[in-house]
View: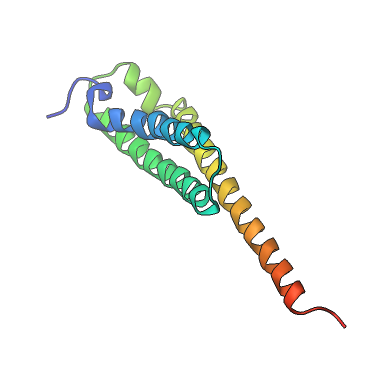
Amino acid sequence: MHHTSVFFEMEFFLLVAFSIVAPGILLAILSLKKAISRKTVLWFGVALIALAGIDIALLQMLSTLVKLTPPGFDDKLFASELSIALYLLPAVLAGIGINVVSHILIHHLLDAEKRFDSEHPKP
């Protein structure tokens, strides 16, 4: 049974949790550490990308669910042109995640190049 608004659906609460709460907790945990391994940073980037994907799926579900509820503010938010703005947060999360993963990969490749150069000196 659906409520009269998607704001009371589990998908909405999950959207808030995966869009705001989870990234905030991850960032807070990493901010408290004095030193962070590359593996941890890599998993942080991957987690942000995964959270963005989950957010997109939840936004799609909510835009479908809003069609089953009586007209209201949720229609304006999830089923109109305004809904495009809701996709900005997942885009930002994915963008940051991609940059973090890219950062780790670039540093790994630079280290591998340095090791290769030291093991294979030019004559």
